[in-house]
Amino acid sequence: MTVPPPADLVVAVAPGRVNLIGDHTDTTGGLVLPMAIDLATTVRGRPGGEQVVLTSDDEAEPAVVPLDVGDPATIEPAWARYVAGVVAELRPTAGFTGTVSTTLPLGAGLSSSAALEVAVALALGFDGPTLDLAQLAQRAEQRASGVPCGIMDQLASAAGVDGAALLIDCHDLAVAPVALPDDVEVRVVHSGEARRLAGSAYAERRSAVEAAEEELGPLRLLSDPAEVDRLTDPVLRRRARHVVTENGRVRDFATALAAGDVALAGELMAASHASLRDDFEVSTPALDRLVEQLSGLPGVHGARLTGAGFGGCAVALTRPGALDEGWAVRPAAGAAVVGADRAG
Ligand code: GLA
Image 1 (spheres, rainbow, N blue to C red):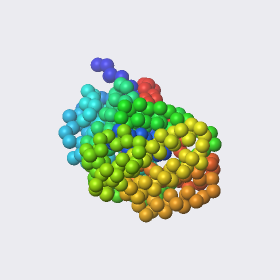
Image 2 (spheres, helix red, strand yellow):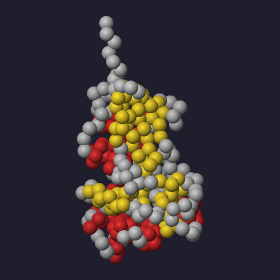
Image 3 (tube, helix red, strand yellow):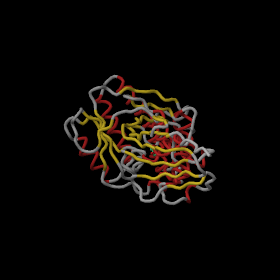
Image 4 (cartoon, rainbow, N blue to C red):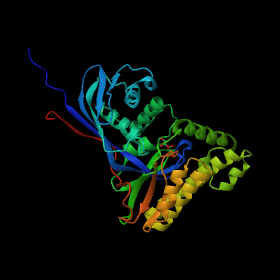
């Protein structure tokens, strides 16, 4: 009897992301400007069997997901729901046994879950356009977490470009690289506060902007913030004003970066934070203090909360070496299968 050779080793790597500007705009087809970062999640293993079995350096319990998994949100341990979400969306014909490791801080707002979904999809054999990969991973995230998230995190992880941030139009999903000037550094600093209520408050904000759109039409088509004054509900007016003004700031930020105008880029980040704090109300006192403190330091062009808010991280654009706290991150290439051989 001959012993079959072991299946090929597959190594898939997907980066996290930091959003430089444009938060809570993706769900209404607006503009965002994230970058994939040089902190990433790696899935390594071999296809085969009837289930997906992944052990993680950071988790006590493995993820064990049958290929015919039902509702991903019911799977334990909780981290395995993201794996189950991908399995439920991709329905691979073979299982997989391997490991997950990451250099990303977990649950800090750098899209560790998006990186996991994208890396798992590639490891399980996803083969198709980058946008399809991102959309599959977005659906996996929604099914796993129950949060009606937008496309930004998964698309940034899938479509990252070495050396460039990504201007993404979330309506037509066009991705345009915007090179970062040589003389800047991007720093991510944790507020010390875990994200709270992120799921339910995120969904509530999303419904509010949808309610505003029922009266005003697509917010992405409004360029004059005064148009939101037609809304009679003061809360909806503030939510809509954030989205309309933030879309404008993303456009201006992309132009400022391309022109190397880091002072203007920093001012736009400050205005974005104020809008997220006052109009969209997703900041926290700890994030406000952190952003204020970072913004006052020499060599810091601008700072703002990044991602969904309700805790988590701030991002700062600085002169190289101006800050030594947090993580210095570089714009990195998107997810890829980096190795498949019989040697490992
Ligand atoms: C989370 C979501 C994204 C986006 C941001 C806020 O990261 O997953 O789709 O909405 O919040 O900009």
